[in-house]
Image 1 (cartoon, each protein chain N blue to C red):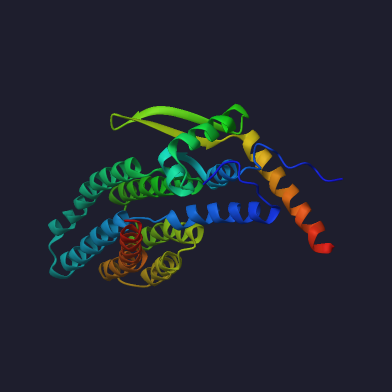
Image 2 (tube, rainbow over the protein chains, first blue to last red; image 1 turned 180 degrees about the vertical axis):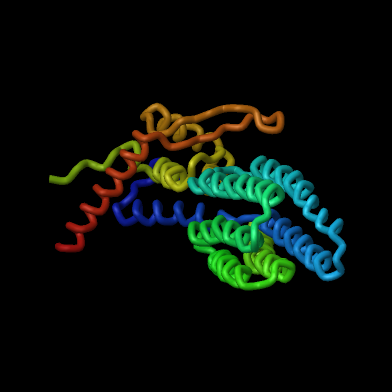
Length: 197
Length: 98
């Protein structure tokens, strides 16, 4: 691109639109975080359902896996940030929303372990829906919008279902809200990456 | 009476840089180079001109032991860019009504 090439008004506007579009097209999420959490929550929910069915309370310790997932998540975020050549305006906002979500989940888990909350999974599902729906809406990514809505619908269903069975709803929510959108994001990311080579 | 187009922005490469930077919070020099297809030398000169005009801020630091230059648009730059686009639209409006 030359510096002093004369520009008409139309050419200037076209150039602005082209450059803004280039940034838009460049933006691709790797989908690793959504896949990670979709997989971990699905696994933990199914194991918890089995624990409920066969009456083996020690199996509920499977949720400790989320601590390992947090460590992997931190590594993924650091690596992705290091590779990124630019920061978008929404990066900080999205980061804030997901950190708030993580903190809220930790506090709700602590609260639920201290006091008996009836239909606790309904509460988790309500919270799952918040960052999922917000991310889907702000990125214009429909699978996460539907995922967020599914979390809330499953939260309502959980209020009317026996506690142990609500783990199945959590597994479905993790698939619909995170794992499936994660697969779509990953596919897009790999396609974009191979196109850039 | 038409507002004169800002001469700092009314240049192909500088306008391309500003259009990229208005879309992001901050961008590395290599990203701008990749998107504008400009040479490193030419891009450095234009980045410097935008910096001198107060339209962008340039930060130089080390990333993975390599020097890394990051640019971000300033408030003054955002204002100038908005005024430039407004002026362009006025020119085009008159052009269409003729």
